[in-house]
Length: 415
Image 1 (cartoon, rainbow, N blue to C red):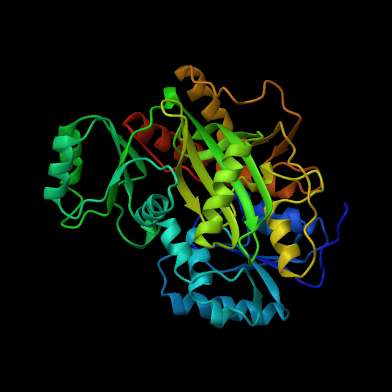
Image 2: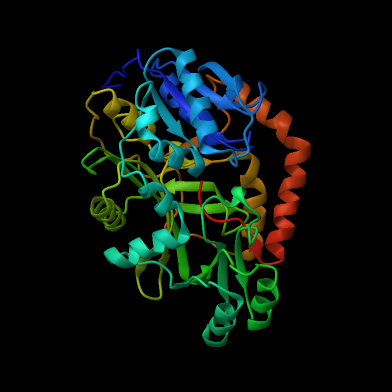
């Protein structure tokens, strides 16, 4: 590779909540570990795929739910920092971690390195309402949306809405309270909306959004790292071919596809809002009006980030480590045509998409190379551990997600 990372500065994978089968964390451990960077990770237990990676120096077993008091989480991070004993780059893998780091920068800046950002910005970007308001303010296309404050507001919306519509939880931290909906929920009738809304309480925490029909849309991804001046040091675009649950969930299969228009849209928006750090954006191209509409803004590393690497060997996690340690980030074109496959969810996704007859027009007919989420010749144990933990409960979970999707509800895009 045309660069060397600072091997004296470790990396720490920061995750809150119970989701041990997270391929993004494994990817980050491998990405920096292959450069000789010592890697540490917070894990639910000692037997997660991340904990089994040959590139992990140590797993800090710390079961969390994402509902703990912020002071408790900050103190836990500081305790881990003292045990590592040297400045360490933080790599958050969820919104809870990204927001906590941003809102407690002064307490964490001693033992840890991370991009400095306006403290309230990541929370606002992770919120459906906050993101919608920023998009409107800066002229970035986004689906039309309403944010009802009461059941009467929902009735008024139902009287004028064009169905189907989509309901999502308004705020990012749905684990902190009882979510109104299980994820992205497609609602086809006025009566269906009013029936669901009766369970949402006096102050419904939902956004009601314009439905973008999949027959007239394409799902696109932008991953990037922006430095302290909100300048992109690594920026990639790709198209999502399959997700699980179908059309509304986690990326199962994706390709790198050059899209200068989309890259420019993302770079301009980030410059306008002044964000620094890693981003993972989900956008839907609406063929009816020719616009890329921003659906989700994840102010952290996305689970599928290893789809993207430049010809100089840089991905967004490597770009952040290089930048935070004062090293130049080499330029290079993205590997167009490269694909990414998440083995444990792509097969059910493939079967579902074949039944629906849906295809992605911009997906290449042949991949220039393939990156698997779990299986790696130089690091096989995470794949074996994933299989051991996934086979029985994982199959049951996939079935439950499929049943939910069949009823018209699915988890939100992202990751």
